[in-house]
Length: 67
Image 1 (cartoon, rainbow, N blue to C red):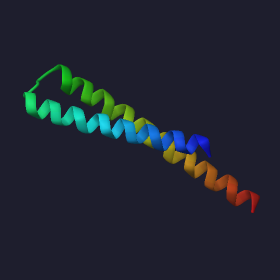
Image 2: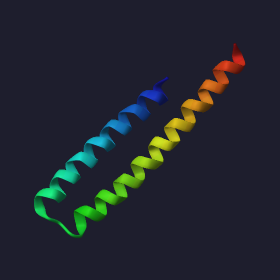
Image 3: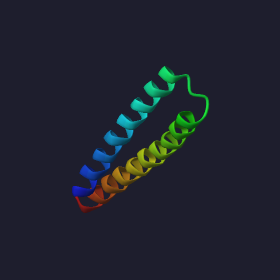
């Protein structure tokens, strides 16, 4: 259960960082650094979200097999 809390916490932090970067890039009219960092964070976010979804699906299968 601690792992799921860790995933949720990591997703929340990542989403917050994405929001901050989007606002900063929009406000500064940045064409390079912040946008590149934003893209990298978006990719990390996608991978973490996909990994979390797979872990939850695996847990569902495990729970169902134990019932």
